[in-house]
Length: 427
Image (tube, rainbow, N blue to C red):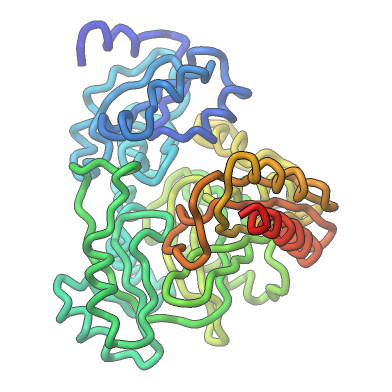
């Protein structure tokens, strides 16, 4: 770090260090923090591929963008020592999955609230998380690391119901495939082994491995929880809808989840408490995914950052508090949100349909005319339902509110149907 860069870090106005670039989080921080109070730390490659310098130029809260190899997660403990602690810093925040480990290490180095350096890597490597959860007694499917396709075939042959093959440390369902016919295991292994995110993940990043798991059929939910000093406070269960077929991409979320029995909610709460204890979480927001069967609840995976797919907005709408503001407060030493009851429901639905800028605008406007619609967004481009393999393949999203979960979900689906119909017609 140059002398000039060192001087920038010494600015007394800096309050928050953001590990990883997120346009959504920065837009929120612009409304919460003073001008020039945020440092964005990002991989040099990602700064180029995502145009981070230009993208942050209009963000008033950003003081500057700093280059660092934050995707080298195994080098985090040494890497964070390069940063000079700003005199007024209040928090270090992992904005994206790939910034979680460095954020945890830097927060611990500076004595600020955080996930905890030692356990942070568990939330970036699904195999390591599985091992920790297994040791702690968290219920989960059987699993193994598949170093070769022969390993994958051997493991898959044990389960008549099928298996899930996935990269160990990527996000957004990239490289994930359900295999019910063992004859297709070779292709699934090759896909997971070769999976990458060149726009979001540096070529020098910590290498991924191939994880293979027993396929468990059941109802899928996620749990969003605030953890403060190892204690779970606010706790929400989100219902999840997933595409059928080989690629289990999420197509909808409803907050709070409906038709979840009190007994099942208690099972999820107990399982999350056990997961927190098993992984040594200090202070964080956890977004964990679970499958509910007649035999209980099963852990799918867990991330230690804001939930994606706009779930934070759904929670804000349903529970009458701002989720991102509360998250920032938690990581800057303020109180954690306490348990509360939702006053309404909120839902989001996704689809994939080709759109031009003109047809996208018309479709959004039509969807917003439906009752309860909070937002409707379409990304222009060449998309189709048949080509969806991960979350990046979706370009249409609608958010709705309602008095009940079913009403919110039906409103979102109705508006989404109208939106995609207009896009198809414009086609």
